[in-house]
Image (cartoon, rainbow, N blue to C red; front, top):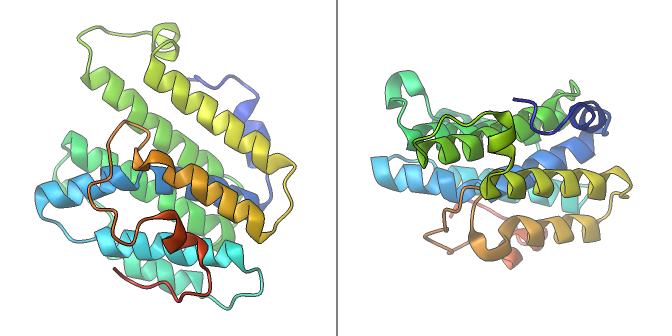
Length: 216
């Protein structure tokens, strides 16, 4: 589906690496409740590692003079990325996989900067929304009908607004703090899942870059 139209992804791919990382990071953070629900449902580990990765990458963007080894941070989370071959292909597993793909893309935008990391996160986040809509309806929706769904419309508008915000932005701590507020707003995910446990997951837990964020 080309729900965004023809210009969105070419424009998104032109963003600089740090902008692509922030774009993907906001989407990954917004999907944290989806990952948390999967962890809680299947009694899996990984929530603390997901949150640790979020905190360290926010810290990276809050302080451009940081000495964070992003590859090592990603290595902490990577073992907990859902594997459909081992974990099954339930709806919850796929939602968690979409979240993990977005988070990994946020790191890869800095580590690899191949230029398509924001698009990967965008497609992963949108895929979760489309999957939720399809799961909640008995109808076979075509592209036009899917675009009219409120959940899809909200996701597309959110991503477009986020991209436009980043296009002309300058890299500074205030930008990162503003994006953290957007990412944690209401602690509700892109598919309407509310975060269950807010310990270590509030705005101040991510915005204080000098607090030595760690696993919670």
